[in-house]
Image (cartoon, rainbow, N blue to C red; front, side, top):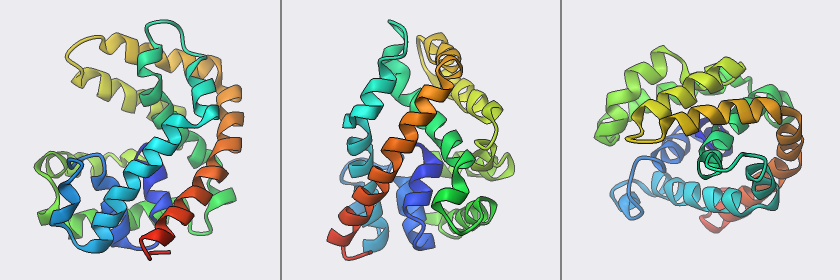
Length: 198
């Protein structure tokens, strides 16, 4: 899952959304430096990623990618799933997508001093360019993946070529999302209860 899905899954509070984002920016033991609610969401972020990576629907979607590009399929799918979630938003969330994203940006800004340096560096662009809102259009997927490919030291073209793969298999991957995502929501709720944050 990419940023928007993690934020949606942690939508219970602003601190939780910040923690969900930090899961991509701190080391496995990095949560110990944060308040419990943030630390728990950092840990939950990793459970969500593991559940996603091992789910049969996601494995099936990765198999649709051509040889060579398959190693980057997980990254491409994470971003594409944010696009599908944007398209299906009203099925999952009563709070409007734009309102939740705005609330998240405000939470990041309010916690700026606690953010890792790498996240602080991209924060102005993330908010000004509305990275999460951009996933509503497929062009936002293309932009995000192109941005990621530019940061790779090698084989960035393979990541960019994944854009064509999801376009080619758009409906099949979207149908898989409809089967997979409700299970992820249920898993996340159950796992969060173990942290006493439900």
